[in-house]
Image (cartoon, rainbow, N blue to C red; front, side, top):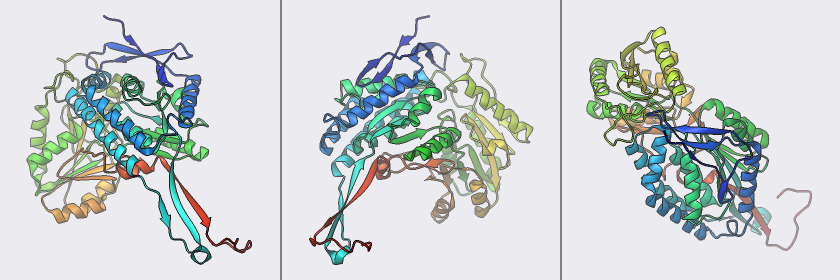
Length: 496
């Protein structure tokens, strides 16, 4: 077996050796073979990265750029991504075991984000406000400024996509960036940083990568006194901690957290489309997405037929090597997550659910992380499996009898990230879209996002928005400037 490739942090435009000796291996979930090794970052490593980002933010090479010059760099990044799509996609799959056809599609699309935010950078405008102070003899204008140094922590399930959700608008705004990727998927971030500086022309220190565990690297980053904005995607539990720390430090935090999204199928739905959509929502990514449509609500009138056809479709899913373009579902990303998935399946049955299909590890596949697509029926909304995020290929099928009932059931959740609606009645579809408590709603589709449309959650699914114009606003601060036109100072004892 070959020795794993050795990687280091990327700080200040170059590879930097950690000041600690501990390292962590990165394995291919399909076979379990370790293929890379990265440093376990220390407090000192984070300090160096934040210092590099601060220096870059205050430098002429970055801080002195015009918006159009930042836009040109963002366009360069898009071009570099296109040149290295296959390389980056393969790294993504080797890290987390998701399908190469999905990872290639994700990476191919990343350039759209950078081009969109390049346009946003070029077209950002300040505004004049017609204030009436001093009988109109006061001039007021409002300007936007970059927040400064961003500390970003990202998960393992879609590494470069979820990094781009943060990095592209941050760069457009004029911020600099320190990134701590998941320890399961750090290699693509290191390579991405290298490409952005060496080929896209990003000035040194604008994008820094420190690999490490949540403690100390992650916690040190989000609590660092030189970080001006925190961006996090991950679990609600960790998000609460990060949000709490940001509150103590009085800095803004955008938090894209967990989900337990409902996928609602009405009797008049096109069942072929609905079943494909449900498959797309829960099995296509091995259930490893915050958007997973893990609660499948099916109307009583079609429940029996739906479950039968859904089961047949799940049984036909081709499991295998995610690097094979023909594979339809890969392994769970790592063994601990596999064990968590199994615990939920067992608990569901103890609480009264019925295992309709799946629920075990296939014997003919390598490694320790494969799990059959799993369907649970006879699920009640108060069961643990219907309320807690599983992050695996486990679909819970629940039934309903009326629109009002399913709205209530769907909203009886701590989460509110997304929801799917399957019906040919567009009046009903729009009523449901209005009443469901979720940040993203799909009608007769599922699990699709766009660079120019905002994404984020309600309730325990997070704070703030990524993508679109709203995503850019997260990295800007607002300043209001007043200028007297009268030549006389107003009454010092009166506001106005």
